[in-house]
Length: 165
Image 1: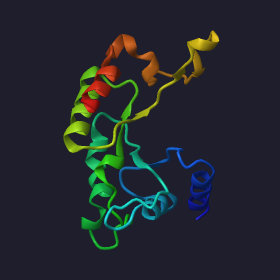
Image 2 (image 1 turned 90 degrees about the vertical axis):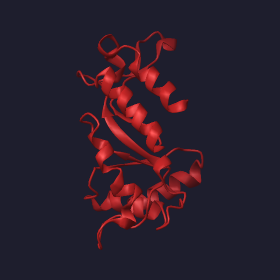
Image 3 (image 1 turned 180 degrees about the vertical axis):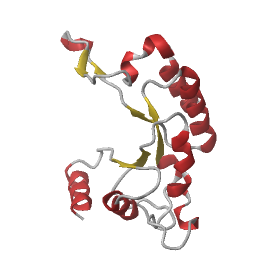
Image 4 (image 1 turned 30 degrees about the vertical axis):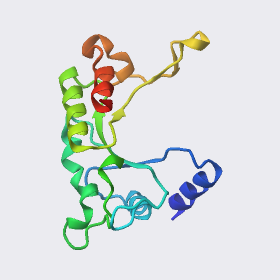
């Protein structure tokens, strides 16, 4: 309930703030489930608590397998932990920042075809050359989408264009 109260206070302070609730593929964390259940009615109407649900499975396209747990929650078995359907346009399947260009493009195609809300990337640094620095926020490691341009080319830009076309 503290997380719900926190999100409500954020909304009160800044109604335009975009709030995504990260979730695992299967809804097994009580606090996450509470946020999703408080965020959407049984019929999928938003309660204006959260804007989207981001599925934290970043292996290839596997996060797409879990969309049903949120989009069609009320069609799952009795006692399923998610009690309201999240509209497809408010679901963000996850993908690794270092994904291959083919995987990125396939994800974008599936997002568009299934009318999902977009892609949640794990992870990407924030570039900021306006202040004389390469990055405003920089992650270490090889999974960074901002640092894999040589291996996946302009795949992220192409994915954006696909989803927005």
